[in-house]
View 1: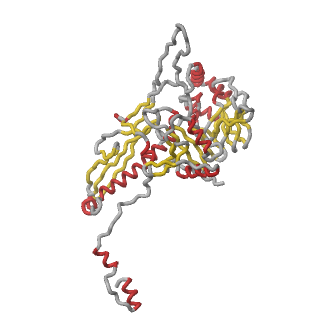
View 2: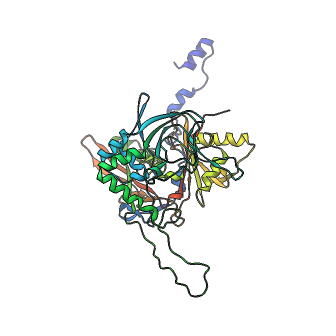
View 3: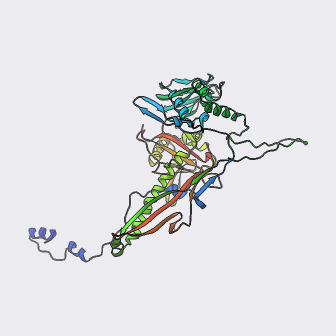
Length: 468
C-alpha cells in the first residue's frame, strides 16, 4: 500500500484513481543534460586573438634593447627574520644574467634587515644613493616636488619590489625623489660598499659590473632600444646620418603548453545507456569543459607564460589607497595605447564599483553576446575568476592591448592536429583494456605571448574587502 493509500485508509476514504507514484512507472522522464558548476564565462579564451603556430613554437622578434633587470624579488621568512633567496638577486639590474651561485650567496648574506614605521623617510631626495633596498613587506611611495612646490606622489611600490638599484653601478648616483613608508615596512639593504668588497675578490662579478657600466653610454630611446639616427628640419645639403635597426640576438620563444587527461568509459555504459543522451558524448563534453577551465587558469597563472607572471615590472602598478579607485584605473590605462580590455576577479569588480558609488559615478555598460559588461573609459571590464585572491583579500586587475597587428597580447595554438574536435583540442581513441574500459586521450595545446612589454599591465594588491 502506498503512502497516499495509507493516509486515505486512515481517513476512511478509499482511493478512486491511479496514484501518481504508480503512474510514473509507465511514464518517460524528461531529463536535463548533465550540469556542471565549474563552467565559467571564460572571457579570456573568448576575447584573446588566437594565432596558428606551426611547429609548436612562436618566436617574438624585437629590436635590440640595452635595458637590463626588471623582475620581482622573492624572500624567505623564518620567524621575524627575512632573507632573500640568493638566485633572486639576479633580478636586480646590476646582477641580471649573473649566475655565480657562491657569489650571489655571499651577497645575500650581506643584506641586513631594517624596519621602517609608517610615514618614515627611507631615502631623502638629493642624498647619495649608496644602497639598494629590497622590499620584503609593506608599501612605500616615491614622492617628488610638484609644479607648485607641494609633494607629488610619483608611484607606489609593494612586496617584492626594489629601489636604489643605481647605487650598484654609479658611485655618484643620488636619490631623484624621496622614498617614504606608507605602512610598516620590512626591507633588506645591500650596500654598494659590500658589493665592491665582494667584487674585489670575485673576478667574475667585477668583470660583470664593468661591462654593465658601459651600457648607459649606448644611445637608446626611452624604451632601452638602440636609437635609430635620424635628421629632421635641416636645409641645404648636410650629411644625412647613417643608421640601421638592430635586432635582439636571443629572442624569446614560446612553446605550446599542454593540458591532458585520459577519459575512461566502461563499454557496457557506452553500449547500453545512450537514450535519450549519448553517454560517450556527454562524458567528453564535460571533460572538455573542465579542460578549457584549466586552460584559462594556465593562461593567467602559469609561471612561464601566464599573464600575471609575464607583465614587466615597469607595467605593474600599486593602488595609491589600497582599493581599486578610478584614479588607479586611469593610471593603468595611461601606461599603454589602445587598451582593449580589463580582466578582474568578480570581487575586484565589485570593489571598484563601491569606489565609483562613493564618488557618485555610474559606469557605462555595453552589450556583448547578450551580457551587460561594465566599462571604464569605454574599455570593458571582463570578470575572470581565475585571477587569484590572496588570503589577505587582495587581487589584481589586468589591462591588455590585444592582437598581432597591434603588437598586443595573443593566444597561441596549432590547428589541424590529429583527431581534432576544436582548433588545437583533440580527443583520441586509446583502445579498450582487459576490463572492457574504453579510453580516450583528451588534449589541448595552447600558450600566450606578449609581443611588446607595454601591451600588458597589472594593477596589483588591490584590496577587495574594504567596505567603509
